[in-house]
Image 1 (cartoon, rainbow, N blue to C red):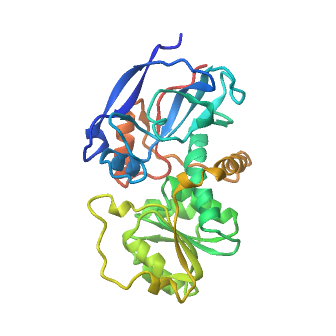
Image 2: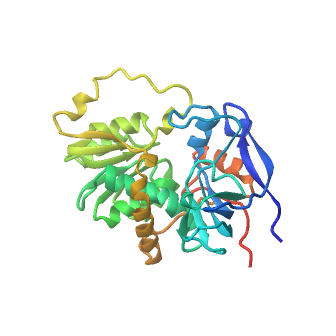
Image 3: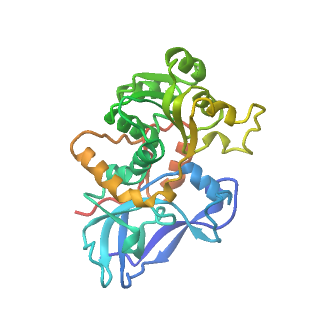
Length: 340
């Protein structure tokens, strides 16, 4: 029998960390209304920097009113369908990448807020969320072309390891930046022709020495000195895609005394471009379909972090794991086991 309640994580107060600001709450299970479905979530994906900034009320484009539900991405099985819903039936796999839909055991909402998936697995969750970000960033913002040289920061992470593979599938030369021997070995195993260990090597010096023609596309989610190294080593007409600024999570962004960015890009005809996936929703469905196809044909692999996080309580552990810098691949939480 379906339980009549479910649990979710709700942000109750503004706090320095997600764990300090959020609590697990028990809620009544809602029946779907017209145009709605109810999904029993099996897995959710962790977005630790976003979660931390939400807890601090520091995400400019998301205006929160406390209390608020949390989490962005989850995948599960449809267990109830409201009137006039045509795209889903009971038992279908459904994924959501909408804020407040992730960190909960069940989710009732408009069918338009979900997308179908071949199965309710961790891999399809990663592809439908992080994979879509990777493909859209490469194609729509980076405008990557076959034969180009592509540099990727945090290349061993959930986003990075998919970016590496997708750039290779497009016929690019790939440089991955990661921290530590284990992560660098992993990035190399994906096919990157050069992996730079930022802990032991000077990223800018390596790029200048080994890639004197420059980088055609750089995708950076770190900021700080890695951003500086990518910017300084762009090729003519190079594109530096900014997909995050992890180095700025603690405290205020660093104040840098240097020539304005115009000096770095003008004579090269280069550009610095911001990637915000939420502004690119028209491309999500097509990207998701193509990613699922690549995965099913064995062209694209999903690597999950080795730490298993179980239950709604495991979300806090997953967030802290990702923030620790020790994770490799996509960090997910198993909210429930599939029923037989």
